[in-house]
Amino acid sequence: CEDQEHITDYQWLDVQFRIDIEGLSLPDNNLVGELPSELFNIPIRIQLILHGNKGLTGTLPQSVGNSKLIFLELQNCNLHGTIPMEIGSNNKLEKLDLSNNTFSGTLPNELGKRMEILILHSNNFTGNVPENYGKLKKLKKFEIFGNPLIETIPNTLCTDTQIRRIEIDCDESENSTQVCICCVCRKQPVS
Image (cartoon, rainbow, N blue to C red; front, side, top):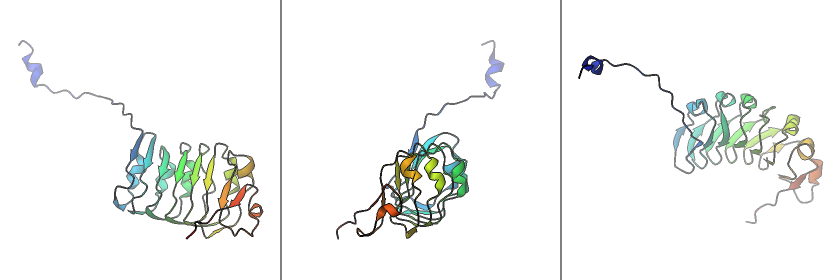
């Protein structure tokens, strides 16, 4: 072969790969340990679905605000702390489900404008639902029941979004519309 010298020469190629990953889905897989902050640095738009992993502990990192996540499902884990205010910077996030954990504190003032589903029930949130949530025009579902003290829910969540009903914790004798005009008392499971 005349070009034998080229066979032993190695040249590095600049190769670009296109990866079409839609999500990382590992629900109910007995994952154990701290929620890795690296999951929030994935440079492509993905769905992160890790619900039902009771051994998954820790907090939501501030980097959730810079992530490209479109769905974040971390319900029924063992997570705690507050929702970082930086989450409002994530304009790609369409679904956030943090239900059945022990998150606490107040809700972040801002959420990305693409938010369609916001499920935060059965945690330890306190205070008011921010007025800015009424600006989430695509919001279809909002669950906040099962938190020790949610004082008020802005009526704009009922009038300016796609939500038609918000279930809250209250006694049937209480007037749920005092909390918001589309609020209804959540039916308690029969024990």
